[in-house]
Length: 128
Image 1 (cartoon, rainbow, N blue to C red):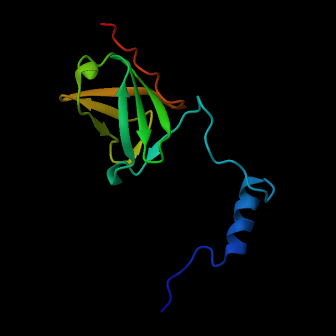
Image 2: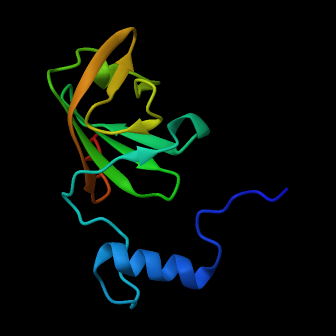
Image 3: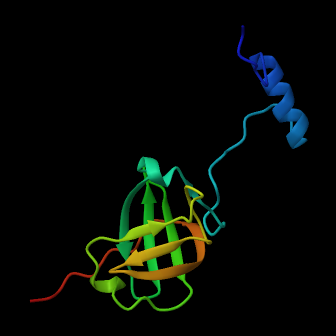
């Protein structure tokens, strides 16, 4: 007994992609544009690599491919600037996106948006 295949050949897969997208068969960039709404898949498999907190309303999240995303929260998350660890509540979807929440010391902090971003700004060095 053979396993059923949805697409049985590379040529068939290419024809399907071109047919569905309405584009030519020339390669296109798959990288999302800065500022574009995004999601990070496979959160339970460790696809989030790092995070940087800006303030009570904003943080940057880095995926395992070292892409950065800027997460804006719906409301201030009081303990976020002081958190050493945070959780990512994806509500069973396994995708971190604008419908997800950040967990900080037991507090659920829902996202307003998650967009592709440049790396977070560097922190200013203290004079002293």
